[in-house]
Image 1 (cartoon, rainbow over the protein chains, first blue to last red):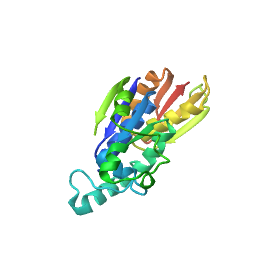
Image 2 (tube, helix red, strand yellow; image 1 turned 135 degrees about the vertical axis):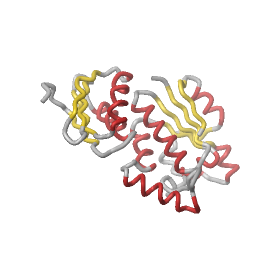
Image 3 (tube, rainbow over the protein chains, first blue to last red; image 1 turned 120 degrees about the vertical axis):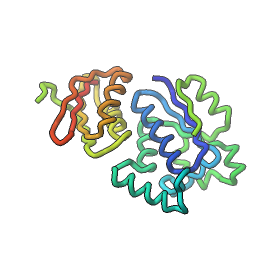
Amino acid sequence: MKKTTIVLHSGESDKLMSALIIGNGALAMGGEATIYFTFWGLNRLKKGRMSKGPLSRMHFLGLGALGMRLRMKQRNVASAERLMDDFKALGGKIIACEMTMEIMGISKKNLRSDLVDEWGAVGMYVSESEDAGLTLFI
Amino acid sequence: MSENKADFIVDVTGETCPIPLVEMRKAVMKAATGQVIEVIGTHGASRKEIPMAVKSLGLTLLADRDGEDHIWHLLIKK
């Protein structure tokens, strides 16, 4: 099992969940995993925003997201917060894109720096992906 | 009952993907070589994917058996 690298470009909850579930799966199967947070994805690294965000579809001014959270709770699906804790516990790596932080006006002090392993740019993602068997853009 | 006694019990009944897989991995990290981990769960997809992980981690699946009320038991040797 090789490395998995994921670019999380989107900030919606469903996409964040996909990135975290795939990342955890890759780690659990014995591989390495890196998630590169950029553009809207960075919003979810802000303090208090891990489990709070819109859906990419059926958002319905927040009602869709509320319904989805309720159904996830009923089905006992793990929260993004728990999946992030697991991802880190299994040795997953988080990179925050410094270039897009500048564009989006986000400073390091706004982000969960306890989760971030590296502050980088595209070169770091490409170099991380050199020996990756699976790379995704979400 | 199996003759293999578990050193670690991972009870993930009621949990869905990817938690059973993740909790299995955490237990494998804690276990020493030769130790046995028993995963107890209810999620069907996890029952299929944990043996795949066992294979790619180079571990041994000792048993995969049904319990009561849709509960399954997987016995893994590190």
